[in-house]
Length: 153
Image (cartoon, rainbow, N blue to C red; front, side, top):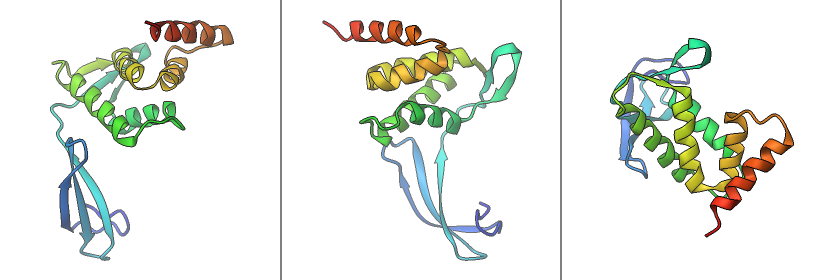
């Protein structure tokens, strides 16, 4: 593992433990060149995924990009980081088990919407506003009205 501080090629693992959700291994490492310590995460990856974007563009699936978009939607909401981690891990597992190496960005967006719907209605609306490209205030009103109707018995 390359040191992020000095670029030295070798590091020594000082401590390993599973993450809270059990989906990764957290490793504390020490660089053999500069003695700096840093943390790495090791995750299971079933297959390489390619995201099909609009206009037939393709790009590699990036877990961090998915995580960032959900964190932005959930900013300043009463959602624990471990809940977001579980949601991202669940979405990634679903995508990897679909059987296809290529997955549409629309499918990913729908999985995020489904996950956020059960987690936090405000984060759900925030994500939807970007994902569904709301252009006017009435788009928000209509969508928020539908969300509040879903919550009624």
